[in-house]
Image (tube, rainbow over all chains, first blue to last red; front, side):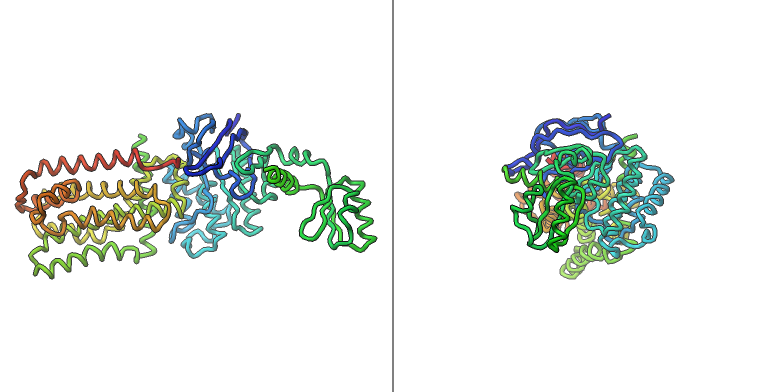
Length: 303
Length: 248
């Protein structure tokens, strides 16, 4: 079953010339973590806000949990929760107040809200701070409180708009674990991020958007299979000319170093040559980031 | 059932955004407490105590109007800064539940002022039998002001405009109408304008409930209640149509 199914979904904001979202058709299966990946202003948040019933579309259609976003938003709202992008916590309210009272306001019983708040604050490693006013906590802890407010609900579908923005590496991994756990419970997550490693590690499926358009979508491995080369070789120093590295594969210049996309055999040959010339060299499998840079870069060149 | 759930949500939101806040930050009560009493002080001194009763009525209404129209700023803060609106849109909470919640939160902040002003009105001649009607009249003004303030908050693009709009509305609804001075002093053409604001009718009704005579041609307590109810219904209808829950 599809948690989200959009067909030719478009959005043009009042006073805007270009569409923020341009005929996007995509489907999100239930029980999955689906990530919208894109640059700032790519249209990720616009798609998420329309699906979360926070924003009206200009044209196209979108069904969320089987209900039409335009005509039956109330059916959807009963079963979703959202963490908006770049919000804030409320002054002197504690993490406990934020989570527990938000659950009560959503209509949960006190017993259930108390149990879920306690459990979520522990899972988000906020239990030690649960009675401290939010305005005395760090930005990262406050962001975790906001994520906890959505994660603690019993919503079937959770929208998370850049949930790990501003979090340190350890906290990000903590949030990832909690999201994976939600997914195991059968809940669906629509996530936006511009952290490519996050998309690669967390997602069952990824959609890359740019300038309001869907460029491609699929599982991380499906997306990676679209890249012809399997390996990338990074060479530092300028001991190779473009012509020379070009004989081993497809080179691009990245901050005064060559990155060469190639196959395993030629990667070995290039590595040996680099060692012989005294260049620093590293070899790694092609990543989603490489695909992202290639696809988005190509798209922008075409524009 | 649905309505009961929304009322519960409203009470929780009201508690969340006021009591929890007040418990840890008593300073947040000062301004709403000080403003009406400072005006009351000036009026009492300048009229040598003759306009004290009128001043108390005006202060009571002003504090409720201020907190209601102040939603233009508070609501904008919850929408633009905290993003609480987006959180609750994607939830079972309806717009009316959210509106009532933040309006109740505002009301809680006025509690210290109300705890002084309402007993003062009783002390000054409002009978306990008339108290429910008096509370109904001022409550309607509060709801009217909250509806307008909230509606404005869903449109403003930045917080500064939100606070400014709230203050401007507070002057129009709370200070300019004949709440701190007798309506009889207004020229007829301005009086007709004042009749378009619920504050005017609430003040006149409170005066009647306190046993004062209102000498205004064309106005009667019945007309006052009708106008007060009508204006409240119009504001609620306008809010239900105009306030933006889902952004377009």
